[in-house]
Image (cartoon, rainbow, N blue to C red; front, side):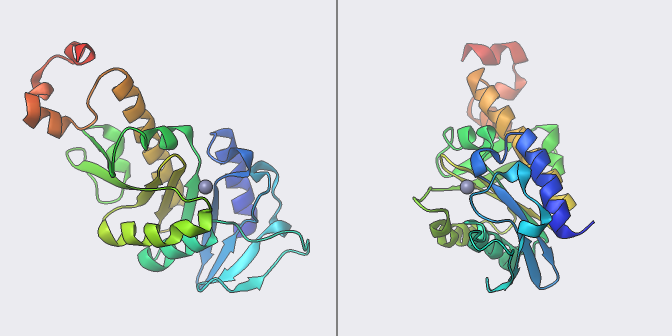
Length: 224
Ligand SMILES: [Zn+2]
């Protein structure tokens, strides 16, 4: 399957997950030194392969769709930033409700520990604290590129950056890796939101050192 067809198929799946509704969110797939990217402002679940753009690594448009009204995704510069800095093979941007709500629970870093799904993130084990930097939103998506770059440089291990009141960018070595990591992150964002709702701290390592919480029976969390 071509990358263009794959982007359309994945976008339909992501739409069903609530990740790319209302024309928001998107994804790109790299092919060597070229990046296949979706158009801006279209219904993500109804895109066709003929609507895709091909960009060079510096953002130059190499191939464009026949429809003159289409423009490359507003996320293009952010996608290219993650590809250049991390040698990513694919980047996914979601407006998932779980990611957006998670940014309201933390100041500059999302932190969670001792949840099985952390193992799905590259380089992470069950006993590691997963940290995801949170950058502030801007009026236009394209203006986020500078702060995204700063966050990627400041957190050399991270595979994702959250954007306050907005969503998340996740990348991977190829589209499968980007997709499965996005699934794990989304699960963890949702878990964090629901844990906070139940009064359960998301960072078990911090809780353990602060108040011996990890040694308490689970039922006691709800009374905090
Ligand atoms: Zn967005």
